[in-house]
Every structure is written in structure tokens, then in C-alpha cells.
Image 1 (cartoon, rainbow, N blue to C red):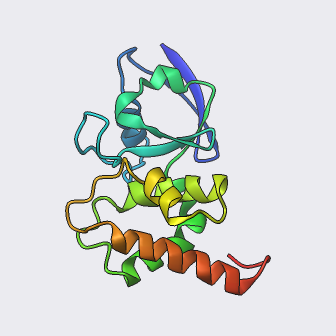
Image 2: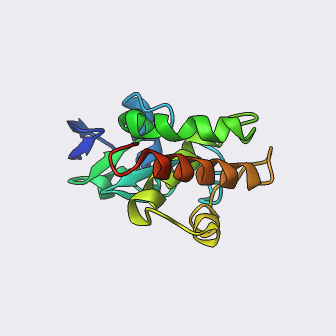
Length: 157
């Protein structure tokens, strides 16, 4: 079957098998930040944004993404760059495998809730599995990022 979708701002037209998972489609198209982890929709490593909302690409058929805007970390480098360093500063990127999922979900969170509470952050990131940390480093990193944005004012970050 033929599909058309927008991937990181560019139109992609491709012929796919009807059972192709979105994660596999994205990796074929050079989006290596999208990782295969649990393959059961429990770890968040495969998180991408579809029309601005986080989805798990390991659980979605590519055909369902036809006509939609798909963003991966490769397409959000500028937005992600301002945040990723804050996670590293808190020592929360020990192996780094979970980072793309955390960054994607944090971008989606901050677009929806610009100044979230700690409970809102925890709730939004609950689907991201990290086996290296206790998640508090990620929370501190997000808080530090938000504080730096406040200090920069309305025209910063």
C-alpha cells in the first residue's frame, strides 16, 4: 500500500506492507533516536509525536500514520537541545538509552503544560522506563530547565 505522511517537516511517500510498525518505518527513514525496547508498549523508548501528541511507535501501524505529522528527536533538535543538558547536569543520563523517550515526552508535556507541577511531570513521564536512575534526576533536570526559562523571561528558551 502507498502512504504519504509528514516526517520531521518533510513529505514522505512510500510503499509499505500493511503490517509495518511505525517504529520500523521511522528507522528505515533514518530516525535512529526511535529505539526498540520492550516491544510491549511499556518502556517509552519508541515515543514520537504525532500531530504534537506523544505516541508509542512500536504499537502503531504505519498505515495509521498516513496523512499525519510525525516528529522524532531528529526533527526537534533545536527544541531538545535546550533541555537535554539539564538532564545530564543532574546525572540522570547514565546509560542514555531512555533519553530520547524522556526528551520527547518532556517536549510534549511543556507544550501542553508550560509550568507543570512535580506531580504533573511524574504523571506525564510515567510511561518511560529507566533502569539506571530513580527518576528524581530527570525531575530535577526538568525543574532546573523550567527555572532557567523563567529567569530568561518571555523571550528566552
